[in-house]
Amino acid sequence: MSKVPDVDQIATKLLDLGLSARMMAPAWDKAGIRQPAMGPEGQFVGWMLPGKGLLLDGLDKDRVGITREMPYVYDYSPFARKRDFFLRRLRDLHRSEVGAITTYDDIVNARANGKARDAAFQKASITTAAGFWYDTWRATGSGGAGTFLGTTAPTDAALDATTTGTLFGGSPFNPSGSDKSYLLTMGIFAGSAHFMALLIDRHISGGAYRLSVSTTETTGTPDTVTRDYGGGAGVGAQLIATVRTARATPGAGTWAVTYLDQGGASSVSAANALPATADPVDRLVAHVSVSHPFVQLEAGDTGVKQIVSSARVAALDTTGDVAISIVQPLVWIPMLNAASIYLERDLPSDLSGLIELANVSLATGALSLLMYANAATLGAVMGFIRTCQG
Image (cartoon, rainbow, N blue to C red):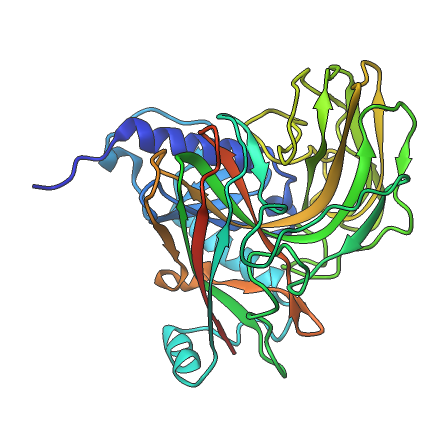
C-alpha cells in the first residue's frame, strides 16, 4: 500500500520555507545567491531564493493534493529553469576555479582517490520553548562549546573551521593545494520534535551588545567577511542576534544594527520593535518575527560584510545583551515535528545543488546549526556530513 502524504504538513513546511526566504535580503534577484531546501521527508524540493521565496523543483503541488496558491511558494516553470541556469553561470564567472567538480563521475573519482572528507557531529541539549529560533553555538559536544565575546564596549572576531564551537573539531573539510571542498550530504537527528534546522557558516561573531542601555554600542576594531559564496564576500550573508545574557523584564522599544553592506557602504537595519518577551540565553532575538531567524537588513542590501554598532531606543530591558553574528545560510532542513527521526539531504542527486564550502587560505568556515524549536528542550542533536574535494 502506498503511503498517503500528509497534505497539511507538507503545505505548512512549504509555507514556512517560502516566508523565511522572502524575509531574507534580496540576494537572489541581485546576485543569484540561493540555498537548497529539503522537504518534510528529507527530499530535495527546491531553492530558497533570498528576498523572493521558495522555488519548487521536482515537486508538483497538485500531485500531493495542494490545490490552493501559497504566498512566496513558486512553481518551477521552463522559463525559470533557463533563467536560473544563466544567473548561476554569471554568478560564478568571477571565480574561474569554481566547477572543479562538475559531474557525478568527478564525485566518485574524488571519493575513490582519497579525497572523501566525512564527519559526524553532536550537540548537547539546551533549554528551548516551542515557536522560537535557537543558536546551538554554546552547546557542548563535538567541536567543543563555543563562546561569545563579553567585553563592553563590544568586540568581534572572524571565525573559521578551527574555532572552538563549530560542529566539527579542527578542520576536517579544509582542502589542500588548488582543491575546493564540496558539501554532498547533510543528515540530522534530534532527540526532541522541532520545526526546522538551518546549517550556517558563521563568518564573524561579536558581543556583548546591550539592550539595557540607550547609548550606541560600537564594535571595537570590527572584522570583515572574507569567505565568498558567490557574488563577492558578504553577498547573501545575514545578521543574527543571539541572547548572551538573558533579557529580564524586557521592554518593547526599537532596536537597530548599523553594518557595512555587501559593497562596503554603511547601512542600518530596520528599527523594529522588540517583543516584550523574557528571552533566555541562546534564543535568537525576534527582530522581525519569532518565526524568522535574521535581522531585517536595509531595503536593497544583498548581504553584510561588517558589524558597526547597535542602538536600543526607549523601553529598555532591565538586563540583557546579545551576540551579533554574520552568518551564511547553507542548507534549510524542515523537520517532521517528531523526535528521533534521521533526515538526510542528498546533494549529488542534483549536481546543481552542490554547495562549495568556501575557504580562505585553505580554511573553510565555522559550520554551525540554528534550530526552530517545538519542544521544551532541544534534545541531543546529531548529524553526519559527507564532502569531497577536487
